[in-house]
Length: 257
Image (cartoon, rainbow, N blue to C red; front, side, top):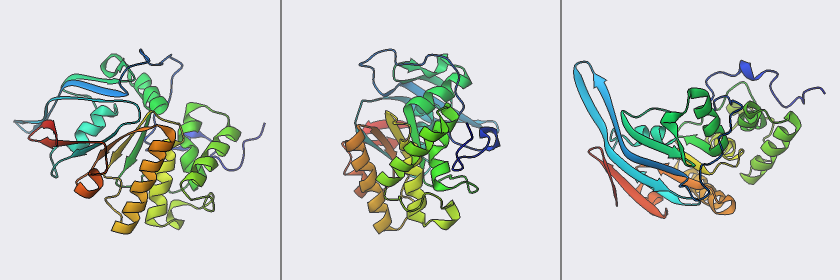
């Protein structure tokens, strides 16, 4: 069967994608009642020359299905570092992160990539869309990497793009989209795999107030419609106030607001 024209010829052509390749291992959740994401006694230390900088100090948090959680803190407080650890994109100095009951430290990099692809979606302040690919190609990329049939990938990508109001932008490349449209495309990419949790790092930080509000409302509506948990790092107290739970990261310690 010939490859549909909407998709790139070879996944190996794609570099710098947020989504890692998958293995054939079984990474189903250990428990039906496991937290979506949980960390226990999480520490992260960076070295700067001869100095050791302890950024995170014994973080404990659990996020369950459908929850909306905001993590606030000043610039440089470690919010993004924590989000990367919760999403399995970085390793802690000590402590454990569990995704759907799976201990991330017990998995190799290939299985960690599969787990991210299977259960998580990521949205960043910058959209990180691949400039040479269209909106539908960018959105379908995680499914293509997962190994799903190209025809099904196109159908799912178009369906989620319609949900975020970009039904007329399937064939537009990132340079042909507005800032708000690029961020909506990034949200569609995060949601196309039906993740149990979306991790969002200042997702409205580069947008004007009006567009930021639209993007935020879109994320909440998709959260309610699909039952997807949201962990959002933000410095915007107005946006955070609409979330179900707010935690503040100060001096390496996370506490309820």
